[in-house]
Length: 250
Image (cartoon, rainbow, N blue to C red; front, side, top):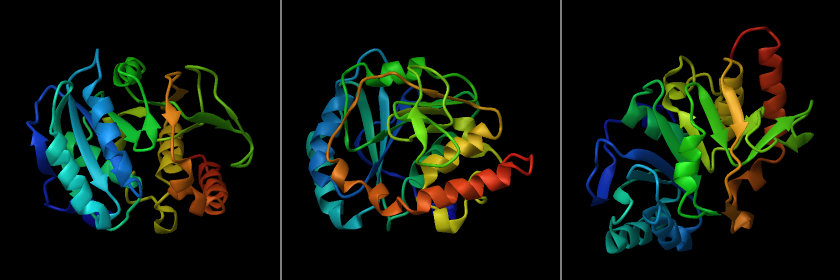
């Protein structure tokens, strides 16, 4: 993960032209190559938001040929200004934050959007997420209050506070990826649990975590990587709680 953070490799521009006023949208690809056309079409159909600078990070290099071919065939159109691409052995969802660090440099107050390739959404999705953005905030459609143990949790109220925000379908202040320790303090054993790490790292520093009441539909959930992490997530949560009880931010 740290190697990717320091890598001099640029993201490969496969379609369109990067515009300085575009909003950065990051998607991690894994195990759903059949979703690429729908994702591109839904982003191109967005209304009410700045044009979109889409960066797709493929964590399954075996699907490179398919993704590249479909992106080049469909191109960039309407709200979708550009599509950039990166492929690597699977490093999980932390790749989203690496993209933000490398392209936005952690500029305070600048939002970036994260979407999963298993989400269907309407043409106002990005605009609605951006309307929830504020400095030092992390807001997403999948958000909970955790009550003592990881699986003891309740969904946060619509546009209300939360203690956990999922990365898929979220908007985050880029300042988070500039905060000292965000990358190197994440233990390697838990490197694939970036959602819980980002939530608790931000929360321990007084950031606002909220649930964005924005409609979204999840498809192909059976392909999610998190099924392999069901035992590790509560272990990681307990570890983080123990760290925060020392009275210091993560």
